[in-house]
Image 1: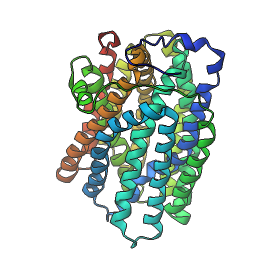
Image 2: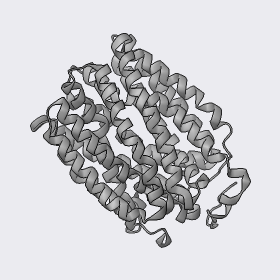
Image 3: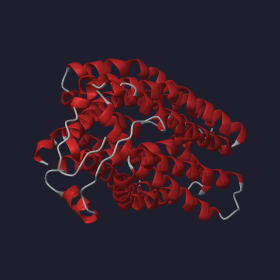
Image 4: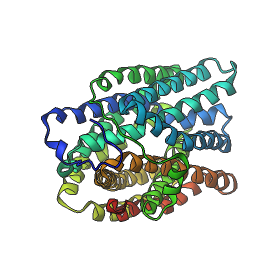
Length: 405
């Protein structure tokens, strides 16, 4: 299958083809295998850097800042790459880069004095290439393979599987780190990524042609027609930074570096929220996702405010439970709207997706710069207030209209 130039592609027609019935489960299996490894390390990675840099939050943020800045041009370069090679080869290259990332971290953990800054740089290169070359093709394929009238249900199945993995992985990761160090979890990440190649080779070949030039892509990013997408995804990226960097470091301080307790805490939160996931998916299929997203983002934002006010384990648990429930009511409809808008773009789906990924990265850059200031001059928890404010902007995506492209 190939999407050509200015040719309109009827995204809805292929969905009734028997040849595509297994494509979405195959794609989801690929991602779930990769996630099984990353779920064991993602929660603890910011803690790993926090300890590596002698508990200096600003230095941890600078590491992430460099990684995000590198990704911005790479998103466009990757789009040109998968225009020539196809989506699956791009995903494969990104996955190999992720293997390289975990291998670099393994060396950092097991051979601390062996050129540490070289391997910190190699880790940045690996994670930047993975994010740039893997995610855009994944989202294009997910748009292609999903069924629009059952999108909420399909997304809920996918996220429920992720949450099931998310119950076990942090607990196992916390135990392994406490007993054997980070290195074992990095090796497990490599193992699951290599396994993820098995379903990847069975994915249907999809080819797209990315029509925007390098500088044109950034012009489109700022253009009026893409503005709702850009602003909402920048807000999404900005909020996400607090969740993957500041929140784990905060847990590290609250639990006094007890990895197993941190992992168990994260696993229990997933169990509590798991039951709601399927309910929300079916609700999206029956009601307007925009309405659910509107109050879901408000609930999610309020959860960040609650986190900013607590300072004990009990308080953190209560605030996190509320926040995780808000995340379900926010994330599922936001992704449903995203994939619907992407499908509406027809043969512009890859341009839409690359703009989205670039906007997310730019939002992360701005947020990291802000966080360096607020965490240095105010407090770690002040970052949660900033996240609460910017997360409200994620609902702007509902204003994007593909027919204006």
